[in-house]
Image (tube, rainbow, N blue to C red; front, top):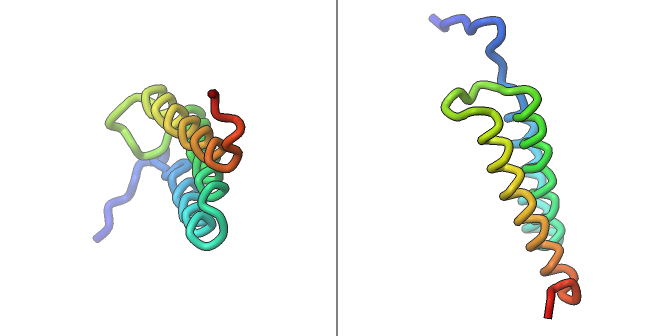
Amino acid sequence: MRAMSPPGDHWGPYPLVMAGAVLAVTLAVLVDPEWGGFCLGVVMAVGAVLRLTGGGRLAVRRRTTDAVTLAIFAGALMAGSLLLQYPWLMPR
């Protein structure tokens, strides 16, 4: 028999971020790696904002810790993919 979850227990942003990550990786593999990486960074940034505002099932760390970590990785991924797409942006 399945246990009932408490009323406030919800998945939050995880299914949305997972679907976006699958689409971004598919874009990176099939179309263009640079823009696929940028889209994955955008999905991670959206996940950071949703984690900060909504929560979800993850109860191991605080929401701010998750949001800051995701935002840092998302920014690095977007910056790296933009530098690969436009090499003239790289400092000399």
